[in-house]
Image 1 (cartoon, rainbow, N blue to C red):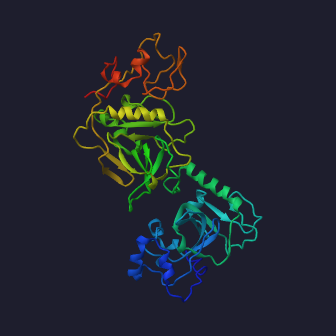
Image 2: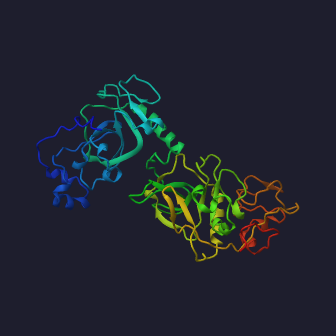
Image 3: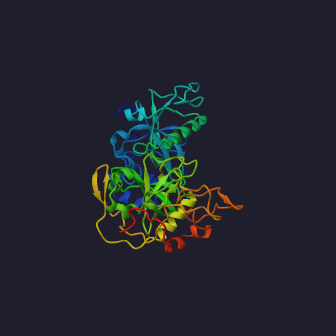
Length: 430
């Protein structure tokens, strides 16, 4: 990984000059001036990066410890390489790393693009050079595994003036969005996007604490008060013991704290409603559920990233049902929590509230009458586009279509919680 170490250094003999520290954020100046170990040994004049140009990322030991780049990457092989700047904001430059040969897994997944040798070289996985640009010394690939950022003044000029044609931005952007759409989530690190306008029902990635085995975990947005938001966690059924076949009746109450996410309207387990995805939403790669919590936590949405792109979205009607379902949950019952089987073995986590559901859902359709909803069989789900006697039922407030009762009865959860059902699902009763 030292093939590029000889290029781009161009050191000078000038000591670190005061103008360098004047450019630093105010909260860092005291530490920098008082601690020599944080300072680069050689001062380099700051540069003004431009998008789609190749720059040099210096040795990590010469980059101050307060730099945000150290949080993103600690491998020394990452430094002393050329990088391609793709975006610039008020404080940071955003870039992809470059290498002669992409890692084997990255190459197999197609998570890289080759830098062209001229302005005429064409190809689906080739980025053409700008007219008049110099070329790289060797065959060079852009690693799209993760997009990084660093403070503007810490990059250095590359030994050659290499710039990608502006028209190739569309190709790069399409490639990144394609990778996000494929949801290579255990390898691909999603880029940061503007999440200020995401609506409830959108699944985003919440970063895990530093030192965790994975980058983050999916959560569904319940309420957006940017930069803060309320959320519930999304988890895989395959990794939870309570969903293993044959399903234990003793775990039925715990399963009622889990609402399955499905692409279409269908019956839920133990008489629970399902969370239906929007028609054009990508599906989750694994059978997943929303973990119910009576008091959803708050976190910072500006720290989250995309889980995939386009994002997974649950229908707004399902979110209304979710809120109603949570509001009717009784207080949790004390007791041991079921264990979850993660990728690193069994873990005991406070994931489940073992509780009884005090209302019942009808599972057997009664005889059709004048007020019944013809052709609607599922108990739960979004009932879109169905009309009866000229009335459009697009604004139901719960996922309920009970055939033998009137519209007012079947679609108000206050009535459901006090109405004795004609048949009670297995697993709900103590």
